[in-house]
Length: 402
Ligand code: C5P
Image (cartoon, rainbow, N blue to C red; front, side):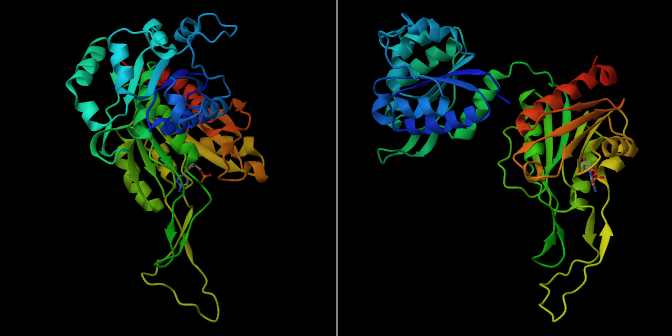
């Protein structure tokens, strides 16, 4: 979660400038504060208004604007936690490497203390030019970080190095730069997420409405905090969180087979998957034909993976989820005890806003002393951050590291 983190985005004049809008959107979606500064040439490719609307903040372009801020480059230079220069042109690189301060962006870079991340984009010839490469070397020696451009088709029609790196790669670099607080570094976390699918015939299955969002948000948050994350995921339509090891499964029994060997080596388990409790007793290998009377499905019980982990847990902190429509507190306490969990998160699962699979979550956290903490309905990334804060509090008492 990038809540209230401060990123200054410097945009320079490249055809890839429109991609900066996509990155801005992704950062703002995580409640990150983004202030955009554009060079004059950047404004030829995309308007300041685009970024102003996306960020809800004014966009600065001029060193001498005559506004109420007399020296904007100094106030802007002091504000961010990191500076992301994207897309960065050969010209911006050259001006920075030679210490120029001839426009607002160059001046604030010169005045800033924050770490600087470069995402260059330019023609291959310009990228490969020894002058550009010398400028990069010089900046790297001064502690700047470069997100390597990709290779491929360029806007000018040529092919080669110089394409702006993929958005996922840029976002991962921003996260890495922002999260120096590695509160979970050295810890292994196993997370289950998503629904399972229990086949009935060659094309039909039983499943549920789980989207996997909660588990994926937890995996991203844990990864941001420096944990080694293994995500065992049922079928979902979400991109894999960056840097996380992911094992994809379909059925409850496949999830069990993936989880149990990992479990022994892990410090924390968070079971966010909505595992199907039952499966059709016999899955027909072919497609069942339409009959005059619909066939009855006979079901049998799936293994309760979390219950099994509770039975054989040693040092692991075990966190489970429950989705309940009534008596959340009572049901949560009973389930936590039955599965020997250190913490259980109970989802409200009634009403349209709290329906299973909804965008936001409204949950109760119940710990081992049955203390109940109620969280407001909020984005699942925010909920994930609070859950991991509480899990971290359990860590030192149970598993003080030498
Ligand atoms: O008993 P109930 O299904 O409500 O328990 C939910 C919790 O148990 C969740 O954490 C879920 O991931 C886990 N679970 C499991 N295996 C099952 C059923 C649930 O690991 N077969």
